[in-house]
Length: 579
Image (tube, rainbow, N blue to C red; front, side, top):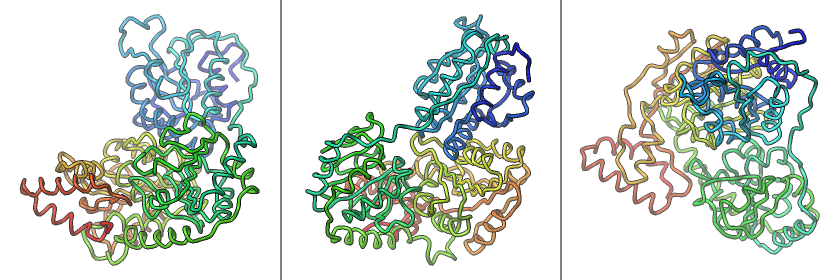
């Protein structure tokens, strides 16, 4: 296509096409010009123009998570790189195979304090498995192939730094062909380890299972193990897609966003089996009587002391284990299932029944109606904060739906750019961004990205004029809420001016019809729902210290004149306080 002597940029683009990449997310500019122009002249790959490089990396991350294949983003030198890093960091911590092209200032100026100079290698070091600079044309295509292999082989981000003048330089090296080894070695541990694991499970009277993203692809095996020993099965947020649906052993989710009897099952069991989870919140784990199975040895034992640490694929380990297990009675399982049902009735359902006339609207009710109306194969993206809580508790998985979020890095403003990447994977699939007003405001310009590319993304804004999760964190710490609230904003009017179909809803009775009209619209659409800022997410387990902190915060707020505010909080959350 380009003749025998290509530029580095042309060869890099050809290599990406060879690797199956169909689009690059980013913002064009100076040091990236040779690269973006090479994309312009290649019919097999597209440039997806966004409005912040951070969004480019988030979008690439969503694409990689949905497809399991390499996705690519790019940022120009200096500020382009520093914007890009936020989304790259998120992709890396989510295990999404993303290659970031970080262009650099002209190679002759590196180290002189030149305009827009940063040190991309140091900048991206913590946010990737691999970051190297392509210093001379002769390093192509080998250097780019090494970066791709790190991204797809280790599952995470790799960063190729290229000075702008090197991108424009000619290279004599042949592109050749290459095959990238993908996936992990899905092996079981040695027989002696399986024997010890079986012996410990057989010795325990009450066994519970807690699973995470590492159970993806091994759902059947996990449920077979649960049936073999009558074990309740809880899950982390990242394990929700795999373990929640059609699971007769399900006892919910643990953690700050959790619900149900998962916490109780994990703590009351004689033996807790952690499968494929690097769940970070130590206070929700019993810190004893635990066995962990994970494909990554670096994760073994870093969250809790272990009776046994097992390195191996979850599915392969369970398949080797099952013939060696002895059956157990159902008493523990049945008690946990009964407790789970009671907690769901009290906590999760508290704001979704009998609230059709309550204003401001309860956000839980909005999430429940969205769950009812959304497509059976919808992709949901959720902002960090309260939207994550509502997605975790009210969006029902079924094996076909997907749920994406910044679950490990915890960045704000991820839902909309994640939705962009998800929608570009398949324009016919329903993609719903569950956006908080704080998150949406942070990357508001990405609404223009949706409109520019005519993506049929549906944005549901939980508009409570507050950073509600931060407010809750302050109150649990014993502090009154400070600088968490902001002016009311009509996001429907803003999005309408950007070319969206929009509806704004303030009354619960209008919600379902408005949501239906947004979901059915053939094109970009936004639903702006005014929700109650006083609705607070209550974890399934509250410590004495947290209750004391909350009480202290209430006292300080009342003493400072906020009696009406606390009365509203009490009325809004009374039914949701665990007793």
